[in-house]
Image 1 (tube, rainbow, N blue to C red):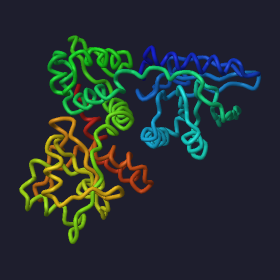
Image 2 (cartoon, rainbow, N blue to C red):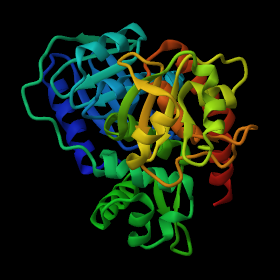
Image 3 (cartoon, rainbow, N blue to C red):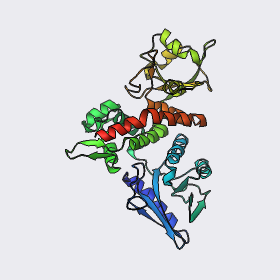
Image 4 (spheres, rainbow, N blue to C red):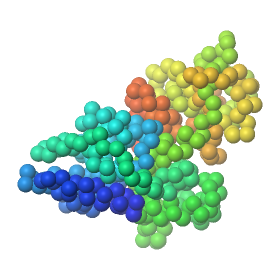
Length: 362
């Protein structure tokens, strides 16, 4: 179970204060599962007990803040994955566009403004339409762009957390001062723990990846997008891999998105692609690949943010494929229903197994 940071505690206490103003409703925060025997997944940050003369319910809480449109789809996906545990989303503010989707999927949520919906018998609670009146709470450093880069490197190298802060900052390409606050937040959340030899290690890699996905989609990914493109006639998306080879760009172009997913999973006929390119070389590479700007083009160009954005293995043709974590995020970023199933398949095939094996080895 992740321990809440000071910013997250402010969200919890603000929501409890709002609930206490409701006639016949009270609430308390519990630093454990719904019962003493329950062991919460690290994705949760304790439980919220709601009670009154009508009885009581205790629900594991999932915290979020500064929810962007890109994060909204990921939040729904994550909450549905744990739906059998009846998670309760707590946020500083849940926009109505997301709230309506949560209600449609019967996913419980509460925010600090007073909006919320809880469908946990015997409690049925629903309030909507309240607008945000106060400034948003400051986001944790781990969910900012620099934090996203640090989390990515910790996922790529499970021993990096024991290296000096300077090494981590160089690997993540962030300022040295950004590392300490992120490491401390991960320790507060119990995602980084010390063993008997006082060595740090990641306690739950899947929970760390979930945190990174939220940070990447909400803050870093929008900043990386460079251009939407289409291939000049007569070339089509099917020709893109061969064009990369013909231009000898196998080491300069990383294929991501739906096109990369077609290499990872069977029975996918891609209609779109993401290309991860070095920032200074993007325009030149677009010309060599016959790519022209197009507002609704099927090819998205984004800048690489790290030296290791590529998967360890290449395609049979020798092409670089994006790391499965990035491919999965790109599919969720597209907000298309058919991509959600593919993103789930990539998680099952390439991420869960590796994460669980590393967790068992440390």
